[in-house]
Image (cartoon, rainbow, N blue to C red; front, side):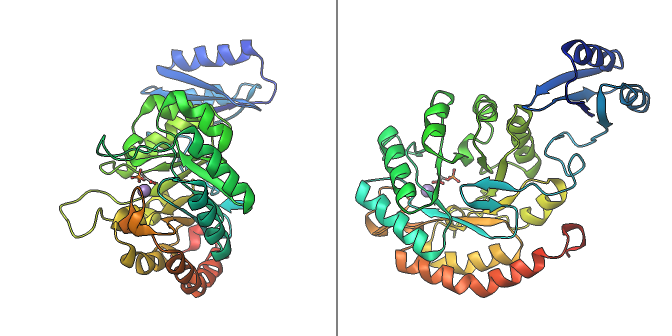
Length: 346
Ligand code: PEP
Ligand code: MN
């Protein structure tokens, strides 16, 4: 159950409502938002009587039953799709938002060139890792704060919002200071302390699905962030690990319509980390648009052959521009389909 308290409900009223819910056999978790307090009640109790009793309090705005284990992110809780502003872009609205940039920020020259290419081709958000999750400890680990500064400078120079990955709780504040959106990478999708920490900052979060995370697990991870106070979460399907070895991972494109039924949060796709191969990306990108994702993340680099990370999947600037140009008719159809309410879309 989710119980929303009225604006101005007092501490005593909140405590008394919590106590009553507990008496019905539930555990309560109250979330103090900027405007109001919301109480999540979890457990097995007499739901009908509890809802009736709690809903009749003057200080309670609404009390609703959410059967899914993920509550705040469920479509049941919020039937309207969430729109999330990042700089001038609005994810989940009427534009297909493309985030692009290098896998890692390497040098000022490199990130400036990327920002120029991303802006010129119609990308809205500049990506670039400063703290890198690398499989090998001997691979480049990121420029850290220096990388954040360069990313910010490049974003500002070309009027792009910036997104970058945060890997540890201790770095959440510094990453938030320099960026417009925080990225939680696939490997940290179930780093619960980190999810709680980004739940407490005032920055939208892009949460990547883990290589082995189910859709339900992804939603429960998103629930952590929202339950800790940050409602602005974008989900990103970036490929899951299967028996197939021809591509780096397998893009679970079905996750888009599945998630659209389960959650109100926007969903984007990452055909770069799924395929791992630059020549496949433009074709997969068309499918990303056609399936109705809210946007896409790709990597681009001035000289992919010498990139410090993820070169094989990084598009050249010319390749990125061509892909963006070729996507235009598909994006026009995407826009037309957005005019149809979600529930009616087939
Ligand atoms: C990345 O975006 O560069 C990255 C490391 O992604 P993922 O977490 O999906 O592997
Ligand atoms: Mn990468």
